Image 1 (cartoon, rainbow, N blue to C red):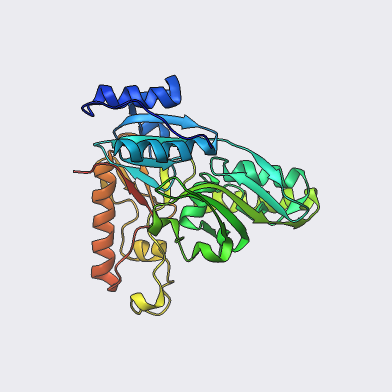
Image 2: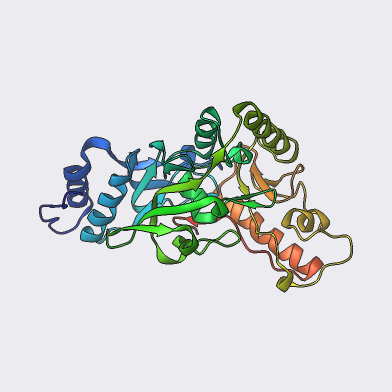
Length: 324
């Protein structure tokens, strides 16, 4: 990685910062970019600056440049599992898209952080590599899945991770073994350290491509039956409560969706945001929702579930940018 060298940003005004960013990244840097079209919720205000990249080294450079400029830095991939504030995102937002996938021996696959989970699944199936096929239909990217330790049907993606490439807030590059990623339910170390995911390496085994495709189709079919995939949403909003969050009446599953349903919230609306009638843990947009609508509905659902069951739901959704 080459050292970053910038001219003086002068007084640090918008034009001076823009000049420095263009000096490093060229015309790939855009200003005042609306973010609603870049998220699966289709809401949110503009980013001050946006850099789209498929190269993990750009993330490292962005960390070093924004540190020199004392500029806020946000990194995201497919825009799922996030709610961007209507006030937008200050500083530089790096949107990581695509990237490389490669086999690392017969039992490991490495994928850059911007690779979609669906793209990784297809790549592995085509080469007869088993272990990732159940993740077919998972929205978002490898980086996002690592950040939140994506889970599905009792599985957690962190259980398959051999190692992860990270960059810390100083611009140093780290290679972290899977056990040191502090994976937990909806959790990983990067949520606490502020590090960014460059790539991840997954454990795989040999498999039959035909059987792997069948397993992937089963996962896709399950998602289509149980989730509002045709509507704008960010995926599940709340974490499932754990046993320390309080007791529940007999027959009530310990899932956020069941609690929201049990509180009579399916179909509940704030502005253009609606609790899905298909899955209670999804909030969808009718096409006119604002992020403020979504957040107000989240708060309403949390309060109603607390009143009905005495359980305080915690968000799985990540808030990005300026609200209020």
